[in-house]
Length: 604
Image (tube, rainbow, N blue to C red):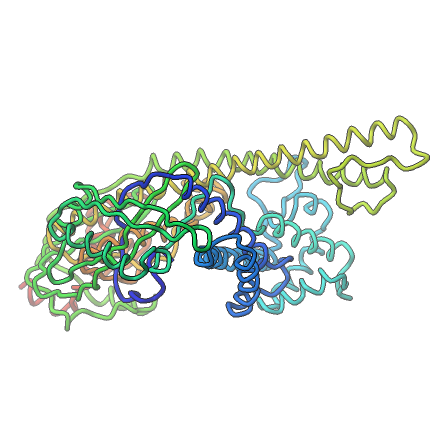
């Protein structure tokens, strides 16, 4: 929502810092009310159980709009801010409900997946079920559940889980197999709960004209003032008044301050052919500070290759995060001769086997950015996460045993929930058992508190990881962009969806490490790097990734044996290159390969 609701969807957009307004009592009150209302909206729309169908947008709107009307009628907050909270909550819970069901379906389909290390007693761990089920299910049970999962698509699986949750027992499942699926649902249910905006959360509010006192005229005037100063690279100071957090209340003053450095930096990258303009404002409210940002928008650049004589090619990896080469072309690029880049694996192999590149394309510069320290830090985090996960699982097992014993002493079903209020000992229970019951009840909730602390620590590690990846990939993206700007080059890179270290390779450090690398790693880098190029109007092309690291571009020889670790050794004449730099050079030459006979004639 920070970029508006579709009015400028064809434009490229960026955030610009417009200062930190004073966190007045009114802004603090607005944030507090927004947190409360957003939480209410989320709880109203979030489905109770993972197996419940995810409502579509209209059904969710109908539920949340009823609550919006109730909150407006009771005067909880100005209706415009309630609407903003509804939109924030809607996107958050919709994504969470979908993720929750995708996670359940994925765990079900891979219910036979096992861990890299056995449990302390030697039992192979089923990683997609609570640890106790690694002992309670035998190989035949797992095979039955795996076969069942493979027969169902997503919709059928969710319906099947809904039947089990409703108390039905499929005739073809044993009690243990059904209970394992119930435990699987409980595990996912515990992990993916309704989103909560805690007291430390930052609320981001897109300020459309209804949020401003003076409506459209006041907002347009503020944006024009900022635009005018940006055109000159000068600082800007302006003041607007936000709509009150209560209906018909006094406006909330808000200072806009465009700093000299920010204005100059933006102005220096102005392009007369693609001028940008300020299209909106966004306010971020934290527990102690506010941040105002402006949304800059500019048209997308038209790819003009007629004046480009250089190519910056990149091979993306992990140990060497980015291997970059700059190639000088013998002349300008003719768009008509560029081959299609939508080739299958078989088509790519045929193309690079039958086409070669020669010395008419000259290597000008090469650069590698090592990711060894980056990977070492992630490995440290992964080890800590594994240790925490093990402790959490052990404590959950302890909780389950204590719960069963508490319920046995109380004469209840072993699966019943344990209330936080201390129970009353049933008549006839001995003094020793009563004392034991009370001690176990206190220990039960101490364990729950300990698990909560460990989960909070694990979440903190994942937040640190996100910041680490953002910093490192942003740094790499900036270097690639500066290199492309220096040579006014076309950027060529591979089409890659994910990067992983396969089991068995020397760099493999376990499932957790791979997940911490893969969760958004390639997407984060691609998003930052490609968006920077788009904003600057630097043309870029993606090519198929197949065989680029194992092909000799001089003769079209494709052989995985040519690459061994970080060394590429040509099978024909045994000439050697650094493997990643050779792959980057192959990527850069891919667009300009020519049939063998044509290349031979040119060389002669």
